[in-house]
Picture 1 (cartoon, rainbow, N blue to C red):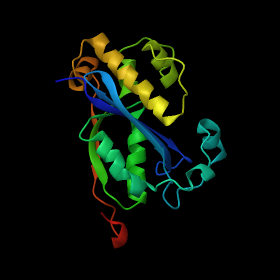
Picture 2: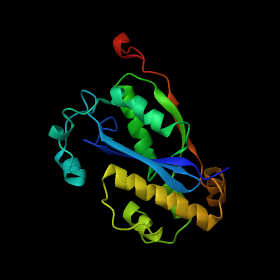
Picture 3: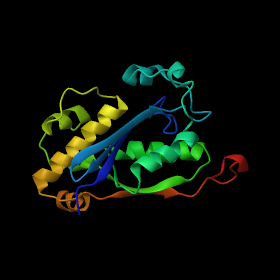
Picture 4: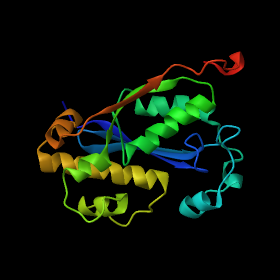
Length: 201
């Protein structure tokens, strides 16, 4: 099987995992980037306050997402882009938590995906003082990107996985996980109970 996956990264408006305000995605086919997508997201009601700390990190403010689609409106586009790929993210627990949290807050079912964490892969691939995304990306030969820009972070994540696969001699993500001794995760859950019928899909 070829090295196929979709790298994904989210930025959030505040500490709530449901507060996705931007997403970046990079599609990889046979170890090469073939498509990219990114857009702003208006977080679900109740999770839409922008904290000063988060704004300082990514530079996205409430005014920037006023006309952006809500999570429930853009989720089909995310799923259409990722298709049936394995998702890859750096510190994937955070990004998968965003999908779960935003879906729960929007009363929609979380899509079913398996995922691989490039942070875990990096720890089994490189000997570094830090495994933060910029440091690992540099080790993978991907430098000078805008950290905390969702699309750039997804590009960096994709570069890390492709580079790590080459170092391990892995032809696909399954082989990479096996050789690096890293487990896949999975998301997907039923819609929350007592959701308003108007928003269930």
